[in-house]
Image (cartoon, rainbow, N blue to C red; front, side, top):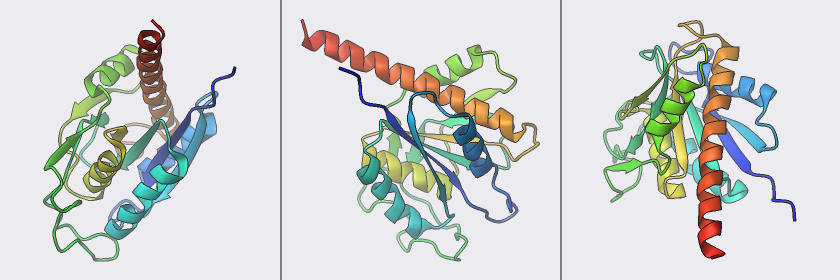
Length: 208
């Protein structure tokens, strides 16, 4: 019997502030062009709005029940493709594009302060680096207490940790759109391989 196709959702963000063209959404569109082989890939442009994120992220998990959601954001401070290890619940006082921020300044009332990805982010970074691309990768534990961090925490909370967040630098500083698209493809292929191996191990134990 053929295995059903794996489903993956990848999101980028819309324009905000100085980012009239958001490198994250450009990178995600590049990924969509080159694809993930036999994987059912769905991409979404997320507006930089707290209330939309709170509604949309749970909807994506409910609608697609994906293996994984990867969220991509832009960071003006990043010079490498940065894999985020965790999302934070509190400290959101930056206004979104609608000049709104949550009264509670947090993602989930009474939620844990910090949620970590169930994916081994250090391992993903190591493997991506070993792939010998013309892009550098690094790891971070601070996604910035704005919509990126807010989205990551919301997604981790709704998925028991089956989410990853990737920060990319602005376009041309130093990478092109196609370099960023290939970097995302590499990251996703590594993670999907890891998930497949852990599934195989579980199946192997069950069949003994």
